[in-house]
Amino acid sequence: DQLCNSIKQYNVAISAAGKSKNWRKALGLIEVMQNDDLVPDVITYSAAISACEKCSEWQQALGLFGVMCSNAVQTNVITCNAAISACGKQGRWQHGLGLLRVMQDADSLLDVITYNASMSACGKGQQWQQALALFDVMLATDLVPNVITYNAAISACHKG
Image (tube, rainbow, N blue to C red; front, side, top):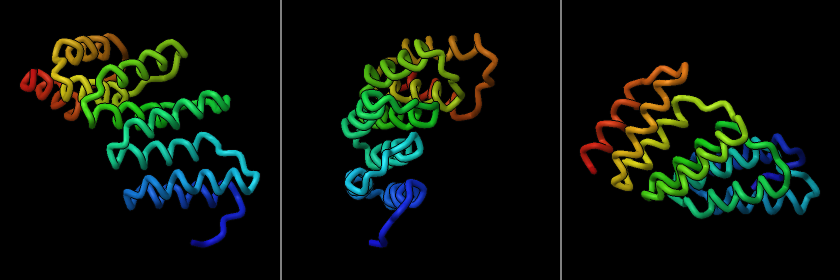
């Protein structure tokens, strides 16, 4: 491992660990970063949560999201989407919808990916009614569904 001496360098290293599906390394780098008296930022947490999402480590992703919130690091749509997706990959639709509600309560900007990930989570949990309700909510916004949106809705109905 190469020594990192800035938040940006750690973020790049954490992102690389995520791309290689090495969530443990990503989390370890956060610990090393903190030991180097550097404070993880939203990009750090987003990269680490994304690493967990790629490996279906939903509990780790939620744990990081919780740490992020308790450390008063402002969440963003990328962070939330990755955490929702991590939950969804394991059929943890309740947790995914909980994160969606947190985003809605915080008046966060939701995007198509947010709804797609949430609908997919519902589909994996055989909650087709929830998925279609999310589809309706999305249609009531200015967001335009894409092919992934329609696939998530169809898949949820098929699994339900």
